[in-house]
Image (cartoon, rainbow, N blue to C red; front, side):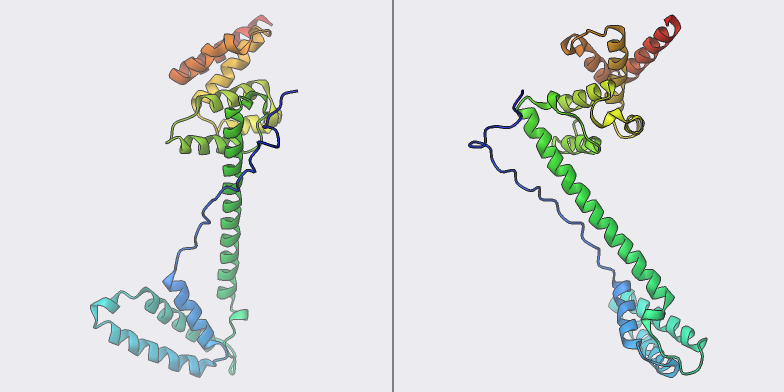
Length: 256
């Protein structure tokens, strides 16, 4: 049985990958709208109308100054006061503003929650990819990559390793994925995963996998080193490698 990791006395505890959390951009307009809603809470139509007049006066004053003329937050506050003024003008007499019953506010909060959840999912995925990239890097250093089965999402890990290498694909990682795809190993046992790979892997990797699949059907006992030329052909002439795989598949179907 092959030992994939060093003995415990020499193994280092793997560090947790550090991935910067995506920061929510500052939105002055949203800040302005929130300020207005906090101030307007509990106001009736008359109070909102008075506040709107004050804001309009301030906007006219600010327009005289070049550094205040393009005030994004100020314009958003004015627009929000105008919206609340119209909202309460159309409401029954005596109605006071409550952001908890304002459908516009509730829709915005739902959208913000969805965006926050998407950012959290993006961060979790980035951490997973980074950790798996570290794992594959360690396995390749131990010459144990070939004994490892690919997992769902390793296509993104392949891209991460290429990014770490300055945007250049890693030949051993590409060959590992191609062999696994051709042999239906790991998550590629699932036909859906193999179909999805067409949109996740590069053309050279896909061509290599297709050519390997046909060559191993042609010569079932062929060893990996005997088929090394397939990787070179796919890397330099991926379209030709794909054409050759298609030709071999056609020849096999016509003779069967």
